[in-house]
Amino acid sequence: MDQGFNRGYLPPRSTGEYQKQAIIDIFPLSLAVIPWGILCGSLAIEFGLSAIESQLMSLLVFAGAVQLASLGVIAMSGLVPSLFSTTFIISSRHLLYSAVFREDVRKLPTAWRMLIAFFLTDEMFAVVMAFKARYGVFSEHYALVAGFTFYVVWNIATFVGIYIGGSIPDLQSYGFEFAIAATFIAIVIPQVKSVSVLVSVIAAVITSVLLTLSEVGEPLMGASLVGMITGYATSKLLGEPIS
Amino acid sequence: MTFILYVVLMAVITFTCRYFFFANVVHYSLHPEIKRLLKFTAPAVLTAMWAPIIFINDGHLTPLDNAYFISGIITILAAILIPRILPVIVIGLISFGVLRFFSEAVPML
Image 1 (tube, rainbow over the protein chains, first blue to last red):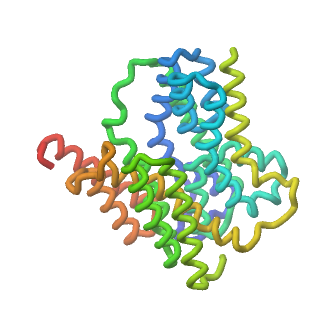
Image 2: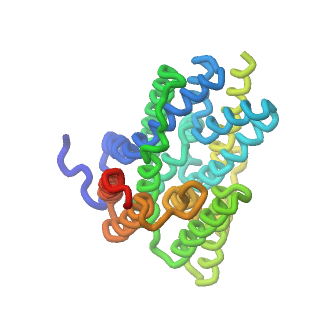
């Protein structure tokens, strides 16, 4: 173990250190997602998919919300067009992540850009943004290793789910969701360094709660957009600098 | 077999969303005002994910004596006081574990 690793606010010094830091940072989120991976695998089997089809979902689609929703769509309606429109609606937030990373990723060779895109999840986005906020740099090595670590854990969890099939206990009662919430809180709160970000976060909280309670529309998409727009408007009104 | 085709098409959709703005076909730089808007992506989207976990329980507002609510507030306070991610997560999880343990032992909590 090298000394001086994890030294306050100085960025890692070598590619190896970036990679190690990425594994450490994505670790809690990888743990929190294991139950959902197991759920995806076992539900896929329960809905009548073959083991290969179930694993391919995690290997290729690699998006928990999409995978769970697609099983629901197939079971409820069996309509293929709604399968693809659901996939697009749930994935559309990744368009935003891709726009956020654009300036950092554009200079990289195509293969690198494709790899980072393939492994771009909520969790990878979250840790890379936290890393950027902390050290002021984007590292493609960090992003790739964080995304890949998460991918491996997700696929092993799916495999376990396929293996145990329909015999899983009620995972939701264990409170794994809290680990995801705690991680995102720990990532978001330190980024509240201006009035506009504070307004954005408060608006997103209120909107997500109201939309979820009223069961109208898409709470995730609605609250994200309201949070972004109120933050933008506040930043504009107060004349905050862009970067 | 057809389902494998669906899986592949779904993968094309998810990948396209992730890759879209990485494509170097268009060589423009994002407008400064777009950059100003995108700055709020991380706080807004991630908050839209954690807030319902903490504040919504079974389709209703989380009761104030619920472990999700109390530990959520503890985690938020810890994050304000400690600017490091891992210790904050650990504090949040420990408080959640302790509260859940006692709420099972003492049904009123």
